[in-house]
Image: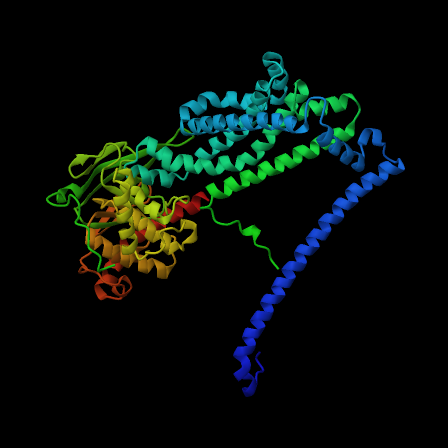
Length: 295
Length: 283
């Protein structure tokens, strides 16, 4: 551009525009190529993993009796959906597990959020209860599942309870921390403007803790499903966990894998819903800069 | 901004004395985590007349912010007293607004809701509060930004929102803790001019903390120099530059400004050096 002669300079503007357009087209093409490459890589990876699995088990290097085989997993998946299970249709079982996880999730999240906010905003209570919470947190809580099954039987209540206990601690600690991290300037500001303690909670503490609570919901969701499943494995009349434990008893790894796939699909859809909720509640947040891709 | 109908100053009639701040023998000690007592300010005595713009200048850590916290009633003095309008401050003082260096805006509220906070908290109906907030956003030149979130604004714009939020309740007393400390020089000058304009309309008593001596002289009726820690009042200078001050950037070149600035710096210099020697020694 520095060596433009007079004649060229007149056309300079038009050419700059053309170059800008060109630049845009190049950038778009580069972006498209990038996504294509990413997708090729992804497909290749799954082909290698599942193809390798299929091949190794087919040839006999890996025993398919113990480790299953992708095609057999597919077959048992189809069977689960067409023929159903020994405990009613697969949909019924999915629904039971989901119900347990969902109720557990709701109960655990509410309890965790409320208690976390209460303890976080009350120094005395926090000091009194703090050590106990830490002790309870260090116990392997999943074992409580056995106690719940013994105490409350094979219905869905002990499952909800275990899921709720697992969820509770995740949400509780985040809510507690969220209250602690409240901007003290903000609190001072509203207090000077004449806010009552309740108004401080409504306008500052709770919204500020909400960010933290929502961040914990993804983990909490995973825990609620684990809680429900483990509890079902320990003893149930229905549910995916029961199908898994039955398959285990009859040396049928393919059905176990098939159930894992079903759970993964359900979890991913629930994650998506939480993502939507997050977007709605946290729309005030600056966009994540790492999401912008460099070309 | 100028052609807006100025809200009649609420409860201003005959209530001038309400805005007098009398600080007498104010001492504040804190307990450090190690169990020692730390004296932040000692025996601060100071009177701010109603409608006066008073700046406090002093070295870092001399207890300027502590003094402000006692006036607002957010903290209780260890000894001495603060009286606002003749009443001893006990609990949060009525009719006070705070402005901090870090803009204390609600990141999860829109600009409009942020400005509405003040009226909402004192129980104004929502519709009126919205109207008032819109009016104030116009006054600080942010009409059309009502629905933005704070993170979408520049530093100067956020400062304006904070200013509108602080002034919307028509406070008797405005406490400002290095409000423009984090701004770049140009934005700072603009904000200072806007603050002076708004102050001249509403005339609250202002207690303004700053490190910037130029800023203190350009804005204030009175500049208080505090000693390094424990803080106490070292000198008080009355600034006799005529009001309205006009553009703060031009006033800096006037003869009287330079004289005053020189005198005050003489007083401040020793304290700054002493505070610096202390921190450098500690490090």
